[in-house]
Image (tube, rainbow, N blue to C red; front, side, top):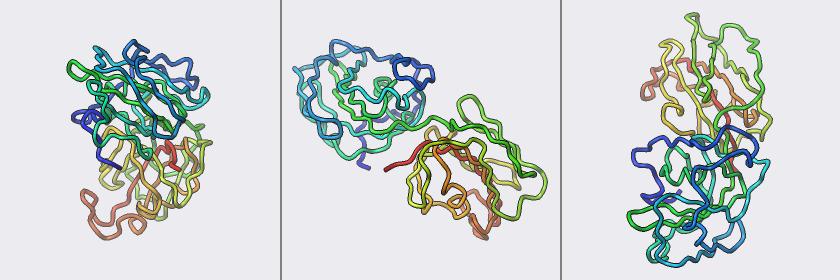
Length: 299
């Protein structure tokens, strides 16, 4: 991924809260905070979705607040960006004072961005978008405005949304999920399973994860013996992206064949984890516990 311009990212990776939308599957029920205003309507955008746009506007463009105009509507039945989650998009940025492209921010291959990491004003302009949308934005920058045009290819789930499933195997950790999707873990004081244990807590009906899939996930990782969390994308503030061939064997086995929208509980014995080697805060011979929400896959 190319290095993102400073405007694009939120200082300190502040969590961006999308306040204008209630969770919904219908795009027309979502009301964005950023208005379709006079400044954003000055941006003339031509070209087809998925290709570099031709962007023209009278200079200088001034904006006292973030505005956005939908140039190409997306899929009304597609997932709606309503929370701190991830999207896959291509975008171009221009100097509102001169009309010149901003170096390093020309339209390119789509990349995955977490709304928790984006500049909050850009996140505001992206509220309620669905896949297939092209959005023109004006974002205040001092007395002028930055101009952005974004094509939205994918909007990933904020949390697992599959049907609840009972856990049939006894002796596994219990999981209670908060309203925002964050899981809470209670690990038994008994000995862990000797073999890999996998329980689907929520069964999704989306795309199937293959051995070569790139996944967008939320996860919590814990140590069975210590009953402590060693890593959590929820605590880190944004989903993670990885593939089965880039993670420990037990987790790869557990997630391959699962569907997007699923929440999966995995207990991994040491030989399918990090074995007899220490790994950062994970002691040697540790049994690991993961709760993974599969939010989407990349093409």
